[in-house]
Structure formats: C-alpha cells, structure tokens
Length: 46
Image (cartoon, rainbow, N blue to C red; front, side, top):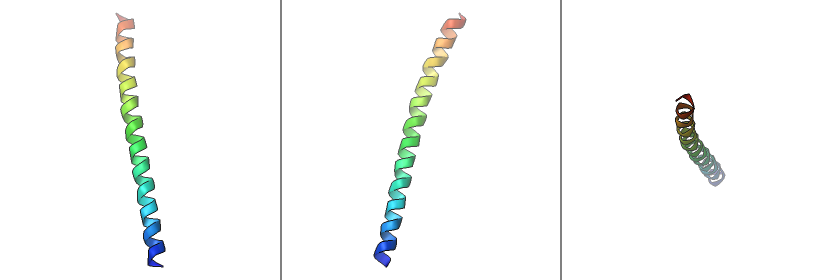
C-alpha cells in the first residue's frame, strides 16, 4: 500500500514539474514574442 501511495506522489510531482516546465517555457517564449511585438509597434509608430 505504501508503495502505491509513494508511486502516486511521485507521479503527481512529475506532473507538477512538467506543468511548471511547460508554463515557464510558455512564459519565456511569450515574453520574447511580446518584446518583438513591442519593438515592431514602436517601429510602426515612428
């Protein structure tokens, strides 16, 4: 029984790490895109 519980906890931790990694990658790529769009908008305004 304890093995099952530890396996479930391990799976949940792995899922959380995967989500955190995906969110970090999305945030970084989104920030990069926003930076590029901001420079594009500034260039269009000029």
